[in-house]
Image (tube, rainbow, N blue to C red; front, top):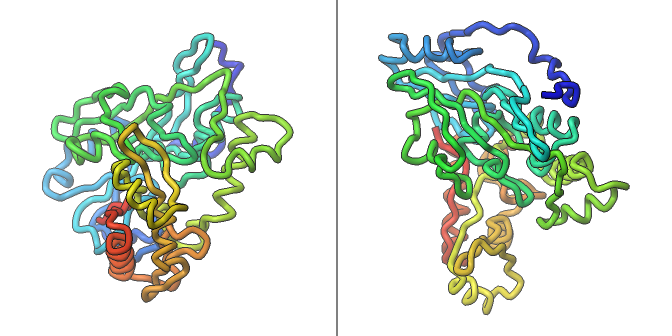
Amino acid sequence: MKKKLYLLYQIFYQEILTMLLQEQYPLLKCNTFHIQAVARWFAEYSSVAELKELLRSDLLKTNPFLAIGGGSNILFTDNYPGVILHSVIRFIEPVREDENSVWIKVGSGVVWDDFCAYAVNNGLGGAENLSYIPGEVGASAVQNIGAYGVEACDIIEEVETIQVEQCEERIFKKEDCGYGYRKSIFKGDLKGKYIVTAVVFKLDKQPVCKLDYGNLREEVAKYPDLTPAAVRNAVIQIRKSKLPEPDVTGNAGSFFMNPVISLAQYTELLKEYPQMPHYAVSQDLVKIPAAWMIERCGWKGKEWGGAAVHDKQCLVLINKNQATASEICALADAICKSVKEKFDITISPEVNYI
């Protein structure tokens, strides 16, 4: 392998990390909603060996436990009575390449956008549309994150895991992961049974930029050359212009999934709502932007206790004024109910309630 092609990944992930275990751990900084909650125990591991050690311990055999990433897709509805597990397995390394592609192995604890930046800085295509999504690499493979016409599964090649019960290592090929819109086998049949430790991504040496989603093409046109770096910069600019920064205003990004309905139902709705946008999923199914429906139900900018609907992107619920989890849940429930009543379409939270 021509290692000189790739920048050394040696920013702040160089430090040697050791396993951390703390009791009565505050989770305020472990969730981007900034909800006050406490975990009975909190454990961080920096290697597969440390994770195996934890899984074999009496602590995890006698207590419930939950593996989290950056906390950008969860809502703690109460204190957690068991052990919160968090990966600090942090590395990025090319493992092989051919004439057209490079396979990059990334530790589960790497910040997702750091990986996107690494790919773009090395002239590799595939991850640029997914730039600036909060969270970590391990969670990306579980949630199948997506944005601007691209999903994580488009570039995932393998997912390395530990089987919880037997502490055995297992590698899942992409075709075995059951990927679909915001879903995977790790959220379905195998939920809680495997913990992701690393992900292998396949990136392109001759990138073909994907621009046919939203106003991405218009934003990219402002740059002199069509490159992954231009697409990444455009995506970041768009996201910053309409989405609140989690460090400033508590939120979990898109709170709701875009519903998929039959073409027949969509055709009927067009009679009453001729401007209703959609994206074709198949010959018989279409995806409807949940934000479009929520806005037409009058929710944009509305408050519910300390919670609110973001005034620039109503797919996002925010912690505006020290919101409680119950206020956020109540607001979400009210939105779902009004969308159902107005459009006869069911929308569901993308965020996981814990």
